[in-house]
Length: 309
Image 1 (cartoon, rainbow, N blue to C red):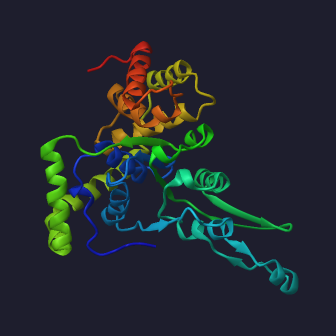
Image 2 (cartoon, rainbow, N blue to C red; image 1 turned 180 degrees about the horizontal axis):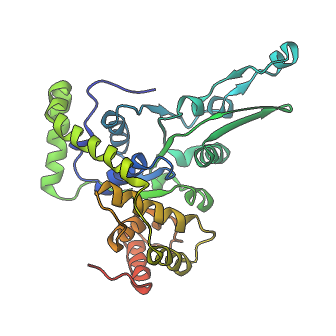
Image 3 (cartoon, rainbow, N blue to C red; image 1 turned 90 degrees about the vertical axis):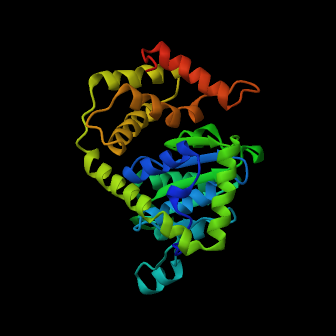
């Protein structure tokens, strides 16, 4: 596990607002279903994930390397011990270590598909079950799954993409002032991490307090029939298989309302949630970039009754 003193502060990260929001919403509602972050190298993906654990004291980061074996991930049963002693002996894996924390997989697109399936199943069920030679062992495994990847190195199968609750695509800053600020802050942090972190202590506490209040508010936010019908209409218009995207859209909108301190879910919450929940579930057209997907999504949202404010 990682939990280093004087980590780069979450609130000091410049830009990348949608990535930061996606992570925060999963902390507000740990049952949401994880985040997939896609973007070119050097865009603060890893820094942001690790900074999240510095923002929320209860969270550590458990790294899952792409070379990890199945036994290293799920744990191993000692069959010989079970036969000789008549009792189960379980060697915990990364899924056990990640319980209650962040399970972070960099370059998740390079991970074996079977291992990705195991991760997503555990994330969805909150339980990890290991079966060997007719012997099984289960333990709680509830974690925030965060996968990062560079799309240029290959993508995930559509079936796996659908299992991630939220997905964001990020790039380097194109604004000169913002890009300059990224450089300045990073150099200041490397020069004196403790002093740099101290400067953001108030902002960090404010953000944490907002997260804690959002968690308390989460189960008290009603969902109107209009919002449910809108989610259903969007799912039908997108021609997505199953109902996972519809349900995730509602849960994300509720978490967003809670994060913003609102008492009800609005159309604007549904709109913002849609841009986190739906793009990675939409089939890309040949040579279509992120902007094209966003434009198609906006057209669909408008067609089902959402009117930009």
